[in-house]
Length: 232
Image (cartoon, rainbow, N blue to C red; front, side, top):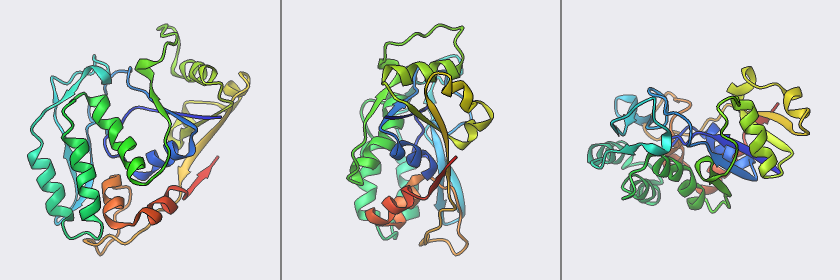
């Protein structure tokens, strides 16, 4: 069994989806503190003026609150309009935009709920079986003395997973031997160079939100891109 854990991000880049896709069980790490300036409530899309950030404001955002304790503002008409105007002529706009709209207009404005649905509903759209849970719903030891590595190992033991995969950025944080001493194999996932035709861009712009990939590629093409990674 393979476990992966990440904070819920809003329509992240494809590397996040590759991590989730490669796992047997994926945990949305939503009972940790919200980080301002990250990708929990924003990402980049391709507009007529080049790549731009879209951000959903968080009501009374605070780095002292957990992700699952925060809420998005309700009025997102400007964001939906920006996405619509940017991609209305994209080849898969008619099938993808309703999925995005459904996620972003969810009546449950909880940040963890909407950000995680930007992963869950995309896999549903792609007809991919995706098993997941939320760390806030798991009964595990939240002892403050435990560091991130110990919490991940504990989650692996709860789910009886003997493999844990992490994004490549975690290579500076986690050592394979520390996991192996707990009979868990640690691997890092690194996206290959993902290139596809962007209908509104002559000069390819990498690492945009998954929204851009969905708008420009068929379901089968997206599935192929999900396999474009290296395990280290």
